[in-house]
Image (spheres, rainbow, N blue to C red):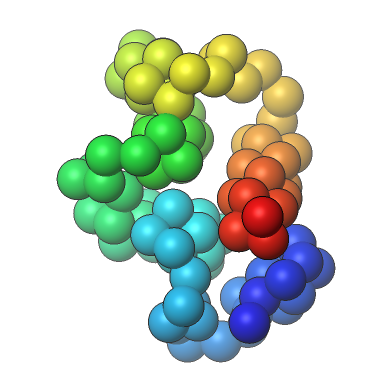
Length: 101
C-alpha cells in the first residue's frame, strides 16, 4: 500500500498505478507520467472535492485557467499560484494523508 509521497513518486517507475489508489490519486499518477488525457478521464466524472482539486490541477497544467478556476471552486480551494510541481506534491500529500485517517 502506498503510504508516503516518496513511495507514491517511486511508483511512477511502474507501468500503471497501484490498483488500490483512489481515482484522484490514480489521476495524479497518470498526470505525473505525462498522460493528461487518461488523468482527465479518471476525474472528470468523479463527484468528490478531491477529484475536483485534481481536475483543477489538470486544467492548470493544460493552461485553461478559467476552467481550472471553476474546478478549484468545486473543490472549495483557492486557485493555486505556486509552480505545478509544488502543487502536484501538495495535492498528493493531502490525498495520501487523507487516506490514513
